[in-house]
Image (cartoon, rainbow, N blue to C red; front, side, top):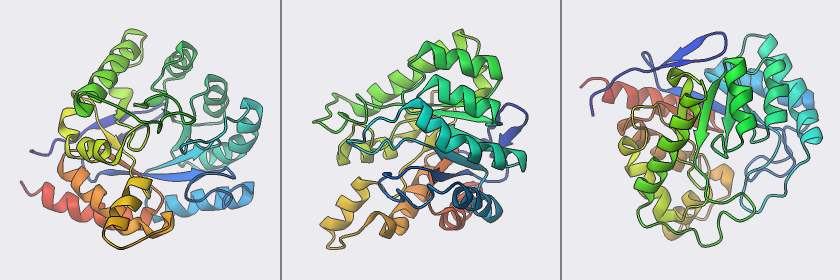
Length: 285
C-alpha cells in the first residue's frame, strides 16, 4: 500500500510518522509482567530506564503499573497509582512523551495530572469515566481490543472472522469516543495482539492490519509475546520472552509493510533498526 504519513495529536504536542514509524517503549513498573516483571519496580531504576529508552530514540514511553498478561491478578488503583505516578511525573517533567497504560479512570486521571500525554487503555475505553477523563484533558488515546479480561481472555477465544470482528469493535469504540468529544486526530487503534486470541488469530490480525484502522492509525504490540514463543517452539527454537526480540523484529517489519503507524516494544534499539530499514523500503514506493 502507498505510504501516507499520519499526525497524532496529543495533549501539548503532536507526533508524526512523516519521518519514521513511531516507537513506543514499554516500561512495566510491576512485579509480575510476563517479560520484565520486577526489573523496574524500583522508582529510580524505572525512571532511568525510561530516560534510556528515550535517549535511544523511543518516541513514547508507555508506563504501566498493572500486568495484563493472561491470568494476571488485578491491582488496587491506589497501589497502581503509587507505582506509576513518580515515574510519569519525572519523565514528563524532562520533556519525554509519556503514555499511561491503564484501564482505570482514576489512574489515568492521576497520570494525566502528572503530565501523561497519552492514555493507552487495554479495555478500549469501555468505561464512560475513562472517556470523560480523556476528553477533558486533551490527551491522545489508544483504543485496544480485548476479548474478556486478562483473567479470562485466553480461555478458548473464538471468532467467526477475527479481522472483521476486531475491526468492527475498534470502529464502534472509535465512533463512541468521537461522539463524546474526543477528536478523531487524537485516536489510535490497537487490535490487541495476544489479548484473547489464539496463535492463528494473532497471525491473521498481523496480516490484516490494512483492514483494521478504518482510517485511524494502527498500533501493533507483539513484542516478545507467547505466540512468538509457540512459533519458535515449532521450529525447534524454545525461547524465554527475552529471547524473542528477533522474532519481534519480523512482526515489526511486516506490520510496517502493512501500514502500522506505531510499534510498542521492549527492545527499543532493535525496533528502531528494524523499523527504519522497513520504513526505507516501504517509502521508496
